[in-house]
Image (tube, rainbow, N blue to C red; front, top):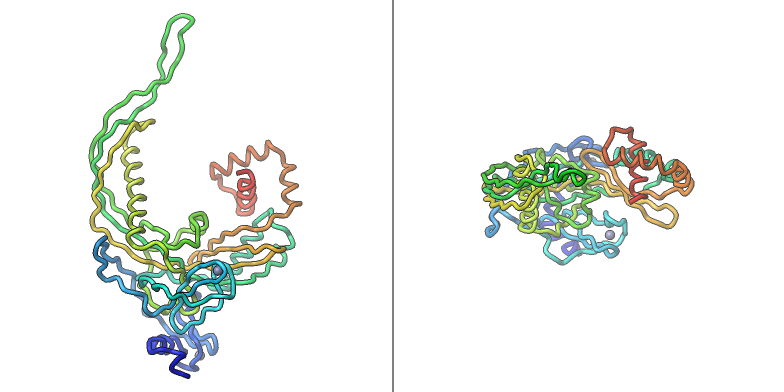
Length: 377
Ligand SMILES: [Zn+2]
Ligand SMILES: [Zn+2]
């Protein structure tokens, strides 16, 4: 029966996402920054406005609305929950590539108010991957020559960003090391002592877009490797950016996100206070901070996730959908690893020194050094 296929809301969304010329599905096209019909090529502009900050109030969620135009799906294999616009079809889990996703009955979550749209399309994301894998000196040649992607999905990763003005008062005791000579005759020697001094004062700071990852599928290491994203230039959320893409559902809510942002700010304030003084040692420092004019955005960040098989193992790759920055683990070639060991301990020590001091090296050298570093740690 027709009425069972779509409810009224579905019909609305579906109508909006169809090509005005031929009726086929429209998708968001990163390369053109508009909607495009994959069937006849018709393009449709998206009205763009900059994202606005929302006022944060821990107790009162004014202006927070449910993401009613979307539906949540759960992956049978890995448990990831993703959201999709109603009327779009979930075919596979973007995180593990499994083809089995089922509708999730749980609360669909809060509607995003900002989005960093995809700028890198599928084809150029694949080119970024190819380039990246060729720079991995320890990856097997067979893989480099014949790199075939099994699944590739564009998914939006959820983050909370916070702005705040802070005013802190502090007092504490810091110390500075100095050397002095003690004893006489045979016992005369140099010792290091600490001279302590008291500090107190106040400090004001302004924070802009302190970012807290709201999902649990992309760990901090992966996020850091493909960051940054230009959240300051994010645009107001519009469902049209979702056409052809999925979004990860957040697991950290707004208040939990704010508490993590506060920890980030308070660590930063503490370091800023200490760095004003010429000190080597912190005996103690008490900081009392007031946060005001706190605003937030719930932003979706674009990411390409791709899986491929090598031998019997599945490997995953990640690409920043805004900048193209890529990261992933690759299989290791035993021949290449063996050769590297022959380079000898002396070389490794020298290389370790360069890696830890972030010397400028060309891309393939950096890949090699990082692989070595990962093997050593
Ligand atoms: Zn069309
Ligand atoms: Zn999955």
